[in-house]
Image (cartoon, rainbow, N blue to C red):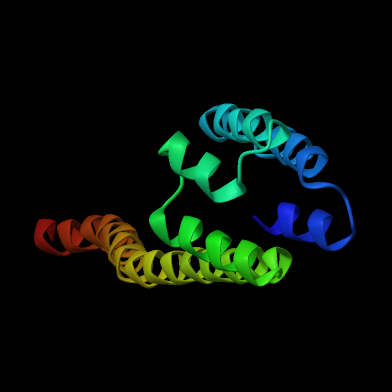
Length: 130
């Protein structure tokens, strides 16, 4: 959505922008959906009705695009959608990072504890042999 918002704001026609976005998506499902949307928009269909027909995009994205189309500020609305999803990704990464920290501590503690036991076990065996 960020790419589409930027291209549309720069004055690139929507049909051409959709073609570029399809190639830049990096996901085959979104590539096919975007190409389908591009074909429908080029024949006169609205962006939001084409997006609804693909059944790939979340309803929030479609509603924001609809508001942007009606208000004449599609680039701003698509930018807000991109901001929302970027924030969602950042929050998910942060949550996973906070879950990984205790696991890393347990693994490191086990490794260091194993090394300490491996170093001191022969010394204890020497003491009992005397």
